[in-house]
Length: 268
Image (cartoon, rainbow, N blue to C red; front, side, top):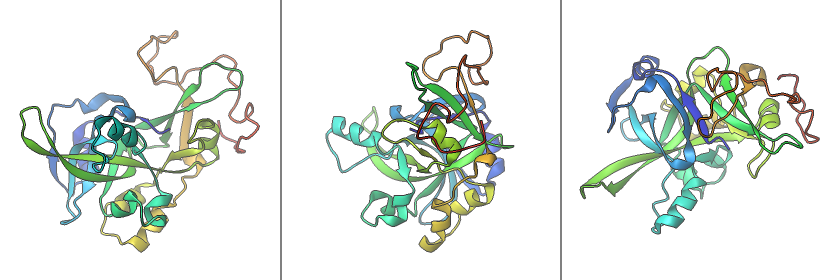
């Protein structure tokens, strides 16, 4: 769940949103104007706005999606564990003082997105239906996360510092629960925040101040959600439109009508 995000913007717009950014580092040229369908389980590089733990300064840097479990040395087992750390349950940051997330609570970041994606299971359908979800009236918004630095050898044998991050999630609101209605992590959603809490997440806050942020539930009326054609691969749409425009699935029931465990919602 919460493994697919999309960013349609330019890197300069991110700097405009956060003029305090003092540093930008990238190992490659990135065309940020259309950064589509980033899938977490491939541990891709992605631009992250982060707060430096020691200085409090903000930076914009490419990090790998998925907190690297450096305590695991076997590469195969490390990847398996890492897939479970692309998302971070917000409830564990303050509620589980033995967790990795409590240890990283001061290493906070924001993940810029234009929208996120989730799949809905339909009773009697072989394939799930993908949905695009975004905050209303915002071309770009920011999902909170945690990050860490680790060292690794590059192809030339030089030791380099690499960042990795995880996205915060919470229990779903009614709209999202009816979309993300199946799987081991069903009824979860990204921790969507309003602009003022996004900025507060990167400010000099203490543990007591974090509670209202990690427990925030975005009202469903502040989100937009609609079905799209596909997320995986690049098949052409039968209507010829862009792959992330709304798609009318023949016979698609309204949200909740096909699910006996659906959360009541008046929104489609």
